Length: 340
Image (cartoon, rainbow, N blue to C red; front, side, top):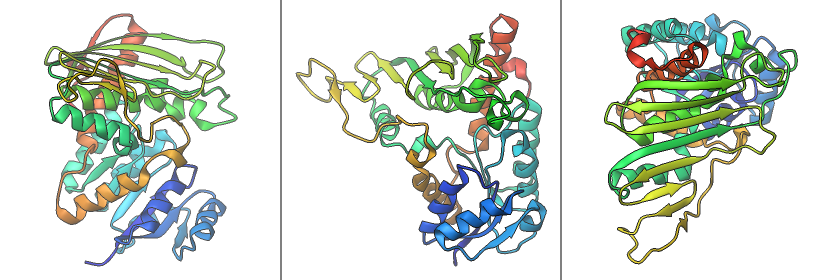
């Protein structure tokens, strides 16, 4: 089989990482870039010496027979429009997070993907961060025993007006937990190995000029009895932090420090895991090469990608429930959101 052709819709900051990752993988070739501003696409072509089509209309690219994979890396409010169109065109789809801003949008995407039997990947790119991969493997080895509590935080200073950046806009970007905190919710579910049943949340609106409350604190009750906690804040004056805690009856991990006496007899203090940490909000620091390689593997080998849209739908369900709880002042059951 020859190279898989890639088309990318949206040529902003994150698109550059997709261009680089697909261009550097010998199994794929970037064949089209779509942008309302062709000069942005041309910049990526020049940087990577690409000989590809540059379009202002996504429909033109979706009709190209040599495009197998479409990346949707636009502002969040048009993810559904392009993800549905790509699925209906028979293309496999990578959707930047969050894939949708409402239950209704999510249902539209799921229907299109299921009907057209295309593969999807939602860009919770920290799945390919070495620390998170290490924690995942320790959980698989039952290193922590009975895990009863998981916590993950997304703390990233985003302080700007909608006129300065689109992701300060409630309409275009969503809420704090959808804009960025969904990364933490994804990791929370991943490490809990269970689905959420009920969510309770509180939020705060500071003088931050973004159009939505910039801080939300969330408690999650999982189906198997675990409890989870996640905080998203864009308001705090602090460097980026992605805090992780997994607590079990036989061991625990807190960020890059692990305490597992069953694996290390005689251990009497936390031990550092020497690896690359999820300690930057800069997309150039994120492991897009691993994400892209995984998606190519799944397409070529007929495997299910993880996290695909089906899995990400459950992450979004927690986010939607958290926002609804924070707005209503009461706990919200996932079942209240309807069919996903």
